[in-house]
Amino acid sequence: MKFNHEEFEDQNFSISRYERMLRSNDIRFFDSDEFESIIHHYLENGKIAKAKKAISLGLSQHPSSVNLKLLEVEVMIFEDRLDKADHLLAKLHAIEPENEEIYIQKANILSKKNKHHKAIELLNIALTYTTDEADVYSLIGMEYLFMDDFENAKTCFMKCLEMDNDDYSALYNIIYCFDFLEQHQEAINYLNLFLDANPYSEVAWHQVGKQYFDLKEYKKALAAFDFAIISDEYFVGAYLEKGKVLEKLKKYNEAIENYKITLELDDPTSFALLRMGKCYERLGCQDLAIQHYSKTVHEDPLLDKGWIAITDFYLKKRNYQKALYYINKAIGIDSENVLYWKRYAKINNRLAFFEEAERGYRRALELGNYELDTWLNRTDILRFIGENDAAIQNMHQAIEFYPENAEVQFRLAGMHYEKQEFNQGEFHLRKALHLDKEYSIILEELFENVYQLSLVQNIIKQY
Image 1: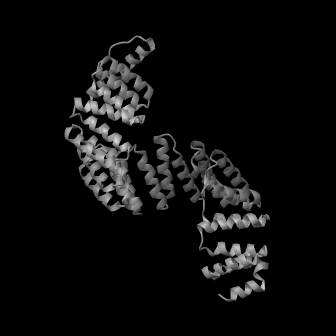
Image 2: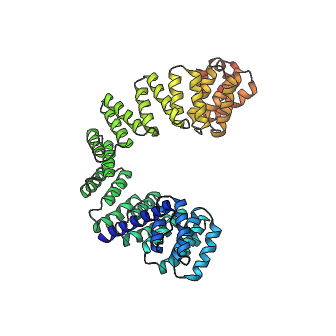
Image 3: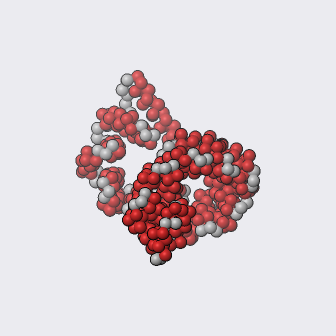
């Protein structure tokens, strides 16, 4: 531990000395290891321009340094200068054919070209030269993930974890693979084996709890999260997940207590505030519910669930003016959110602001919300405000998504008959009756005059 601390101090000293040199424009000598440390620092912090400057200076002082040239390759790959990177790697391979980093960077280039199988072949060669097998297995695992080969990816990440029990990145990747394969019980079995050797791994207990949650085994999930908290009483994630389980068990007061703990341990999160609001609402504590919903959107104005929670709260109370106020604020922040526009339409419809309601449904459709009720509601509003041609056009567009839907066909039949387009009306009426005669009530309720026509009644009697 002392060595790591000293190493950290040395790195900070090198960086400070290097940056003083840049400010003074007085070139000083740094050994190649110092330059590597400085370049890694800039790369890890996303300061690519500074990293390139350091590489240039480093190579001017150490022109034969393979490691500095490999860092140059890394930057080239980041900037998609793949041919130049490949050319430089070929030269470096001739100098150091057993340098695993050369194979790793070659694999990186192939991966960027979506040649993942070939990348894995090179990484397997790197395995024969490396002293850090876990790092290379992790890279191989990522290549398998790119190919959606979750079984092989899982095996690679398991090898990483075997080499380092504290490699939680590998553990999370293993669980990701289990989750994608929907192997929840298998994931639990694996985690239990891991816990046999590492009984106080709060991350593993946390993951066990999440697997039981997905299986809806809430009492087992609760026990797992309790063990995670015993292993680390400051583990915020475990309290959040425990709160979710307690909500499922309808223990809302206990859920609130767990969410409160997260607020004490860390900065307030919009998720915890939102869940507390939901719990208070279910307990009938209306003032506390709205208070926490308001805190949620203040904490994270981009969280749509917060705005939706406030809007729905007032919708349930039939306080449409306040619901409209909040959904307008939400749209002002994110005008591309379909969920906002659907609520905007619904609220304006309730307030009898039909043109605004139509606009809401139209925007929802424009944003890709093709649910049947969106098409139907917009059509009914267009008819109500006298836009009959637009209503017909809307239903014809809906047919592209719902060609065999009786509700669409009955509406089209009714609207065409209203325009005295009898052939088209009959076509859609017969299709609708063939699909589901029960929905003829749509004609009876929405198109009463059409329904009473003798020619329409005669057709209905045939089915």
